[in-house]
Amino acid sequence: MLKADQGEANNLDGRELAIGIVQARFNADITDALAEACLAELAALGVQDRHITHVQVPGALEVPVALKAMADSDDFDALIALGCIIRGETYHFELVANESGAGVTRVSLDHQIPIANAILTVENQAQADARKLDKGRDAARVAVEMANLMDELT
Image (cartoon, rainbow, N blue to C red):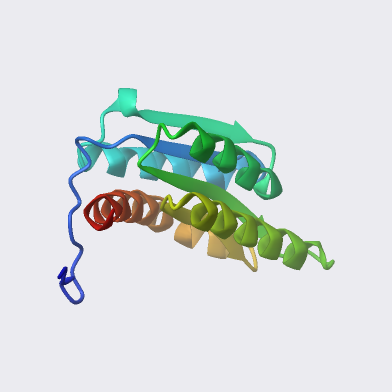
């Protein structure tokens, strides 16, 4: 029986992992910073550059279809979704936030592949700026930990 350590990250060794990243270009000042922080953390966790595939799509709604293509390839141990949705004056914020999140989850469950969802959903630019580096690093850590956990479970 597997037992997880309460409150502590499990296996964060990324040396043997292949990771796919899908980055939305919309709000590029934020998503570029998310990607930089994510890539730096993946390197710190031992994921080799040659085992990272990083693609960009126009916006958050396009992230799930690119994730699905990566998942379909069976070339990756985990995937990462990067994006930033900032609330505007219309219902569009809710639509994009809900549908992109549901799409990411659907791909993960349908393919049984871990996807670290770092698509920020924030009220304003200041909130996005405050979260971009931590969320980028967190996404890398989640992807590596979950890839290793799934390897143990399957």
